[in-house]
Length: 70
Image 1 (cartoon, one colour):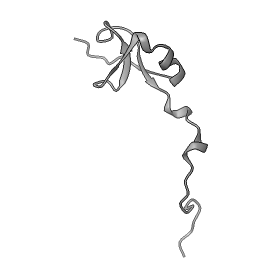
Image 2 (image 1 turned 90 degrees about the vertical axis):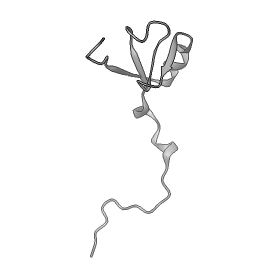
Image 3 (image 1 turned 180 degrees about the horizontal axis):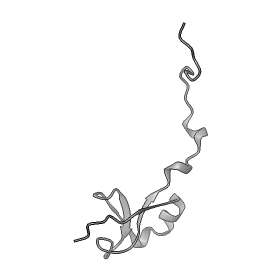
């Protein structure tokens, strides 16, 4: 039994779509692993959420940064 977890590698959603035939989603790891052997060997891939565009997540509420309380 492996005691050290395999490091997660962040890749773009584009690569996950291209590699979809050879990858499966593991709910216990919350990541994608190789089909068949992913339980023991191979990469552990996660979608890179840090590259999402900020313009798609616009906030319409009031701006509170830099606000001062009197």
